[in-house]
Length: 225
Image (cartoon, rainbow, N blue to C red; front, top):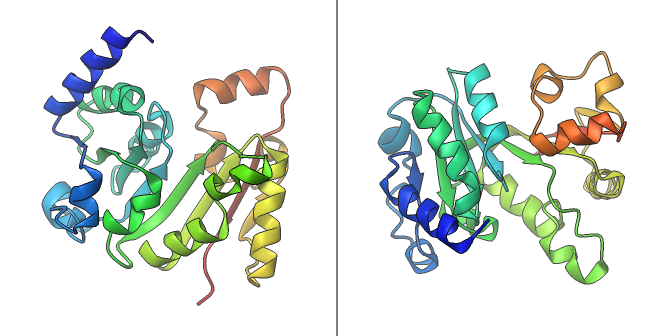
């Protein structure tokens, strides 16, 4: 994507009612106006809030929202030029239950209050295989602690990935935390009991993976205490 296109999308994002792009300073100083008030100020209802972290173009966020009009969906990504497509699609489709945030996932605790959200989706995150990159792995212990903080008791975490490494790594961490996954499968499209939201929604790259018979893994879990 050219720099002109990126700039155009950044400008257009500023005009979208379903996009917010807070500065790091605004978040860390706890001046973010939606903190703890997402239902009241943004969605204006009491429906559950589901968050997709690293949402990319927003394909999964949008399709989840279409399948679940009685739930609220928020896509988070640091690259606003990517989720521009999802935000625009939501507006064109008149989806009032979709919102996008441009920020770093590390700042999650400054975006949501304790026990404010119901589910987290991690869809095809970078597995960060190299040891020195593990701090960026979205299921490392620090991130899991952050998710537990903002999720309601019993709130779900979903991990859908083409990386056997990330799937196995996450299972190992959960075992160390005495957490038994609610669902775990290494080839989810061949599992008859797979949740509809897992097999009925595909990202662009996922459809390419499936054409070359690349296995897609999925697991879901919640925190016991």
